[in-house]
Picture 1 (cartoon, rainbow, N blue to C red):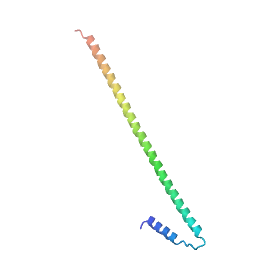
Picture 2 (cartoon, one colour):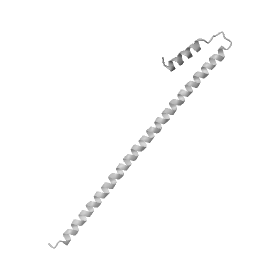
Picture 3 (spheres, rainbow, N blue to C red):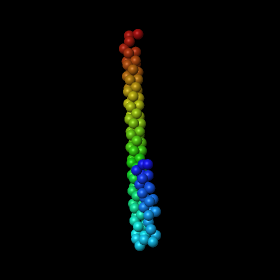
Picture 4 (cartoon, rainbow, N blue to C red):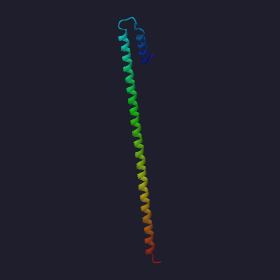
Length: 103
């Protein structure tokens, strides 16, 4: 039996041990309700924190992906500019060579 199961069994036993005829009945029930409410609030807070952390990771992942795409586009743009410069140089070089030939 796990620790959580033991805790649940203890809680069930404590609820079953509440005597309706006891003068502190309402106080005992109120304590159980407050305990359950506190546990539920804690669980909700944990789930909320997990969701916020997951959303942050998702946003960071998207930002990294977009940054990678942006740098890939910059690399492609630089390569394209270099190729066009090389083409311009070769075209200018061919024109100059044909002018210099004695034929």
